[in-house]
Image (cartoon, rainbow, N blue to C red; front, side, top):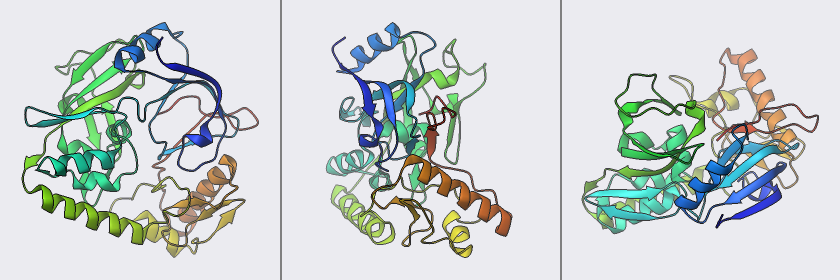
Length: 311
């Protein structure tokens, strides 16, 4: 292998909440070929977690007993190919927005407001300001547990609000013999229209200013914690329940934006997860609405129970 394998890697370094446990193993691939070789060499039952900027992820305090693949700043190629823009999964979404504007494309500006990587944006159909990632995807490249690469079209996936999954058997693209959860995005080709790059840059600046004014970016957070329920906003419901400023340990419902939970400096993953559950319970009890998490929670609690796999 050409990459770097680490043991007992502190995941608080790799998630934007700056909290959580350790990964048993973490691999930083040198490139896509190296990633393929590494995956092929892993035991078939090994739990895997692909991590970009960790802006939508919480690793429980008991840690993740499998292997984490650290993608950010590794698979980070972005270029123009035949009037499409190719970006690897480790590219930060704001970087793609700026690159597109620089090369006189319009339509990528919304990506500047997504604080994660392209891989994460593809996996959850991330979006903001009324646009979602898969609206501008033309084609994707994936990798499976055996290191096999595939190219797929949007038609091969079931895509909805914050949800992406391979369609059942019968689609035109080749199918993996493994479950969909065993196939990960490594790159995508995006279709943006040619236009005024300077105007796009100005829109990016305006969107970033709007984000700075509305979100608690001065404290570690993972962006929106809950999906917006149909016809409503999670932040409105949380605020209506009087939960702004509510604390458990070092975790707090942001006083600036109610759909954000911030780390005041010493929050544990358990603090954050308990606060998430408390918000869900309160909104369900007082407003009759079940808030679905947008963030992923993986790994074991200190007692040893919990999820073992996620993206």
